[in-house]
Each structure stands twice: as structure tokens, then as C-alpha cells.
Image (cartoon, rainbow over all chains, first blue to last red; front, side):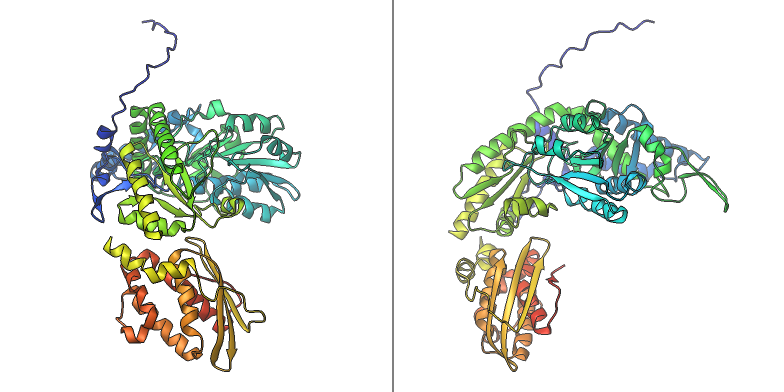
Length: 420
Length: 148
């Protein structure tokens, strides 16, 4: 039967994003901390898990647990199917062309280390350069520093302006014939800046330089399509998108992955082993040595399904409204300075308060049941750029409400009361 | 607000806003840097010893209210004390802020205001940073001490 092909109409806008119904899916949110309802605003550090994710992991251990890719028995087949099904879900979620382009790793950090230690080790020569940006997380700095040191290559850093935006001209100027790789955050964890990744990829590709994107903060907040971005590598962590800790995804273009040497040696990454010679397995298994965290991808799949069912565009709209509201209310308080005021921001509100150290803000808010992050957010060079030791950071998730922003504002007023 | 008021006592807030002995000692014979990587607090403690006696002690750096007040009150308390007395007082101070022992108020003097810290385990490192730095300075450590 022929299937009629309909043009793609824009989806109707969903205005009735029901945050209360969403909250009901998250058991951990329904508790009191120091006598106050928990207000969880530390989502850039890690997100809470919906019942669907917890159930998927429990179900796996109660019914299907076995080792993957090596058994003929039923449970092993089920576990393998679920593990590989999760790979296809991740592929669809990122808009990748082929599920072999999805490698399961522990985290964004491990994904970046993998690329540095394989692609980097293979392609960097003395005098070459790796270009990163001034807003990177330590995990997108140190792995490059390590491989650059080993290969006598140079780490270059594209600067940001006062608002926390990359300066396009400087970025372009730093792309030279020596540049062998660009690594850039999609969304800055300390500043909330959304980088125009597509634009940077175009600029780098014009000079035949591949681009790796750190998507740790972006995947849960913005629609991501690696084919539209045309990036060469993209990495994210499960736990920042309502999935479990200990599981992450590295996307890489197939041709690049196939040309790269393995990362770690062991079982599953081989097709045959003899003492004289080992033949490595094909992509993606070449990069997944040893028995992996099997429940991780299964939990991650449940999380990606959950986000997809709510609609990433709806989540994006909900969080943008929260950020806009929070920005307006918090910046209206006396003595507050926002850190990171880019035109295009998402999910993160970083601020400092005159005369009060962020650590003290964090303690006082905690007494009100409000969880925020205080410190340098694993981005010490960003703090250095603004001449501050630390910031207080509220970061939003799909379950946060305007009332919780009001609680944050009352909490900040209490800080000002205590410090008079 | 009980717990908070115990932590942020008036004396502590006052010291954090106007820290005492907040200066460098030119030609200090002992000096060390302390760092709390968790929150970015960083202090340098300077000492001038006369034999075993602390003739002068000062600090500089940046940190939260608890760490700054603790550094300030530490310098006030230790001026004129011997190395040995300083070491012993650190032991008691550590007991006080971790809620392990219960040193008497007469033993602790003004430092007793830090007893509220024991209810906030995440802040113990703030209260002890200056003391760890002092210890490093007395022992002549070259590398910055870290609370981690």
C-alpha cells in the first residue's frame, strides 16, 4: 500500500505544559528540607530522575539482567536487545544518520577524553593547535591540555566578551593552518550562554578543521540535531537529561570513528585475539571495551523517551519563561550582579551579591530548602575572566515552577537580612 | 532561623566585614598559602616568631564569611602565644567545629562563637582553612595546603 506523503506542518503550539503533572513523575521532589518544600535549582549539576527511568532500571535488574553480546541464552539476548535499542534511541534523539555513530561512555568527560586520546593522539603533531573557548568547563580544557602536552601541541583559547559571548572575529582569527581540532561548549554551564555552534562549525569546516561539541548542558534544554549542526563529534551525559549517572554518549561521524584507533583494550572491542595479532571489532564496539554499564543505556533510553514525549520544544519554552522571570526578579534585587548576560541564554542564572560570598548564600538558601550551586562550577578560567572567586548559580529543569523562583527571591532577601 | 543565627553570629559577621590583622607582614619568617578548591577560598597567613612565641600574625586573601572571620579571630587569639599553644588550640578548635569534643568556653575564649559550625558539616572546611594554613606556615611547607 502506498503511503501518502504529507507536507510537514508546524506542530501546534502547546501552551498547556502541565508542570504539576510533570512534577508528579519525580518522587524525589516531594520532600521537605529543613522544614521547607524542596526547591531543586541545581539542574546544571545533575537532574532528578522520573519514575519512568527508575522503573526501567529496576525492571532490567528484576527481569533481564545478563551480560551482553556474548550469550546464546534468552536473558543475554534480551539484555543485548535493550542495550542496542537504547543506542538507536540515542541516535534518533541526536538526529544521527547511523546508530554505529553512537558510542556509550561514562560521561561527557569520558567522551572528550576518548576523542583527545584517539583522534588527538593520532592527528596532533608538534606545533599543531587545538582551539577551545574561554567559557569551557574543566572537562573540555584538561583532556586537551594533556594531549597537547604529550604531543607538544598548543592549546589556544578563543576569548569571550563581557556578556559572556564568544567573539566571532577572534574565533575566526584563531582558526589557522595549525589548528587540528576545535572543541566548544554548546551551552555554558557557568554563564548560560548558548553558542551559535552551526556558525562556528561552518567557519572551522571552511578550513577543514573538525569540531567537537560539549553538549552536556544543551541536550536537556534545546533541540539538538547533529546533522543540522554538522559537528564532527558531540558529547553528553545521561544524568543531566533526567537519566542515570555513569552513562554518556559520544556521537562521531562514522568515517572519523572508523579511522580512529581504539580507546581502551579488552573484551567486546575485538573480533579476534591471538598473542601475535588482535583484530579490533567494528565501530561502535571498538570503543566499548569490557562489560559496560548495561542498565545505564536502558535508564538513559527511558529518560530520552520521557523528554521526547514531553517535547524538547515545550521544555525549552517552559525553561526560557522561567529564566526570563528569574532574571527579571533576581536582577531587581539590590546588590546583585548577574554573571553571563548573553543575548542567547538558557537554563542558567549565575550571580554574585555585593559583600556576601556565594558559599554563604548557598548555606542560607539551603536552610530554606533551596538547592543551588555555589563555587567556580568547574570553570575557574571563567571566574578569572570576571575577577571573582565564585558565583551562586540557580539552574532550571523541566519540573521547576514560577513559585520556586519566588522562593529563591525570598531566600536571597533572607541572605541580605542576615548580612544586613 | 535558629541554626543560621548560631552559624552567623554577630561577632562572626562583624569580623568578616572588618577583618583584623588583614595585612602582609614584610619579611615574615613564616608564611603559607591555603586553598579550598571546593569554593575557591584562598588565604595567605604570615607569621613573625620570636623564638617559640608568635610575635605577630596576619592574613590576606578572599573567602566566605566563615573562613574570613575564622582567620581574623585566629590571628587575634594567637598573638603572643607559643607554637605549642597554637597547635593545641587548633586541636580544640577542630573538635569544636566538628562537634567531636566539647571544649569548655574558658578553653576556647572568643573562638567559642564558632560552635554553630558543627551543625553545618559542609562549612567545617571554611572554619578550619586559616588554621590549616597556619599549621603549614609553622611547619615551613612550601606548597599551598589544600582542604581537599
